[in-house]
Amino acid sequence: MSTPTLPGTVADTTILLRRNLTHLLRSPDSVIMALALPIALMLLFVYVFGGAIDTGTDYLNYVVPGIILLCAAFGAATTAVSVCSDMTEGIVDRFRTLDIARSAFLTGHVLASVARNLITAALVIAVAVVMGFRPTADPVRWVATFALLALFLVALSYLSTALGLIARNPEAASGFTFVIMFVPYVSSAFVPAETMPTWLQGFAENQPVTPVIETVRGLLTGTEIGSNAWLAVAWCAGIAIVGFVWANVLYRRRLTR
Image (cartoon, rainbow, N blue to C red):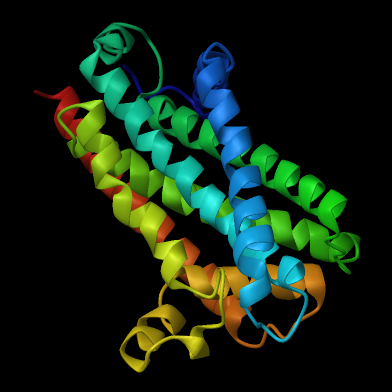
């Protein structure tokens, strides 16, 4: 691998992005899972649990932002498995013999994750609207919503990429991402944080996912956002920087072995 000019890096990244998206389309079980899981979760929480949960508002309007973020976390976490598979199956050794940008491999995986999960988020919102979800967002707030989701996905995808690089096999990579997929459950995704036990409430209110959910909820349904917007951006930017640096350091070490 080489360090070409910026146009060359963009071209290499585009090629690897297309490769990752093509692999996804050739794996129908993965596509079905990515599309079915968020819909199944939304149906479960709204129609099975929703009648017993009091959030002070229509539960469907409350839970949709949480479902979007939960599925985004799940989708981004699968990036670890994809990266680990590439590292263990020998394709990276082939890339090393080609004149392509070293950063294109990681960036291609991250961008594929962002694209895939933004489409899933749009699908979740569309199904929610059919179920009765009525967002009040104007065009500017819709753009802000998807921009924040994209930043959230970039952050989790780079973190998952790093976890995929330290895993010895895809099964281990899947296990490493358990925390990423679990954290949204202990947030304000499904119930207000103040309804939780005191010892758990502090964590739910001060972890990265809650301000992102509250910001998305405010943008889509008009609830109070307050300081959650800048907290959400700060958390996402911080995680993205850590994940980016960590992933690139690990990748360079793997290439020099």
